[in-house]
Image 1 (cartoon, one colour):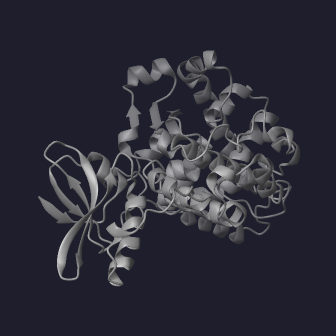
Image 2 (cartoon, one colour):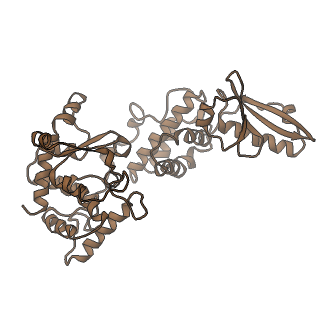
Image 3 (cartoon, helix red, strand yellow):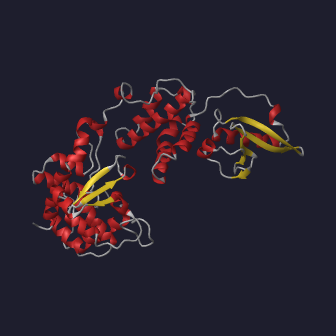
Length: 408
């Protein structure tokens, strides 16, 4: 069996059917799967009118990226009439940090939740890590090199600097696993960089999302209720649950569970919405109670596929849809809805801050409020209790919040 395709690391790992699978880089590189199940890299080329195969190593020792790099080198020699097999092997050279990071990203791509997150990895590394570390052999990078890389942005862009450090640490861990360098990892924080750089908590300036002031919230809610359309309904649900935009816009009917009348009476709420960890900021499943007003809103929506809030073209609503709606509500009001701290017009994510401010002003119990916001609280011993036993309390908080929105 043979074929031409853009080979991926995942395909190479799982290929089992014997045959030759040619890569799309047009160098003759292909994955050769033998009847025995062993897999190796082979490059089939034409040299002086004769077809020859050049072995590039077993897939357990040579990565797809390494095989492609070698096949390109061989193709250059062949174009010059030189047989690569007769060349003296070069001394083993330790790859650079950039080479290793590129290889790591190929493997990491399948783990990242979406293309945006994958792009953020590349942007962070190219902007903050590669300028100073990119050309360095990966085994020569020291704690001082990491410090000098991060020190430039640690005070001014601390959140970005922390992400950069974490990503450098993962790449160097990969290099250690591949035996390109020895442990310890110079990018680890605890017991290492924590002694050289200020604690993040002492230098961070958290970004405050502009929020509707509590005193203006019933007036804003009344303006929202007068709006029509899917975007308005999504923003209403976001507000009633103090949820994040992506959680609401990605809501699926299959994530919803509604109770019988008897069950709802016993529990104190109408059902549950289970959001998978893949769509949560903390990457862990989140369960939220569905109170009667939310139940009623959901049953007003026409069902078109599994998405609860479908966009004009049938896909998920864009984040801009909700943001634009809030801007229009702000512009249509005589005084608008201005955040008291930043003096900027409120945005959808700021509603979570409004909910928290309201909870503080009305002396709500902090634990169910934090759980509703999907914040991590408590010890590992209390987490199961929090998830299973605080839903009724959270439903009561949401009901009081809804009454507040309606001026009651």
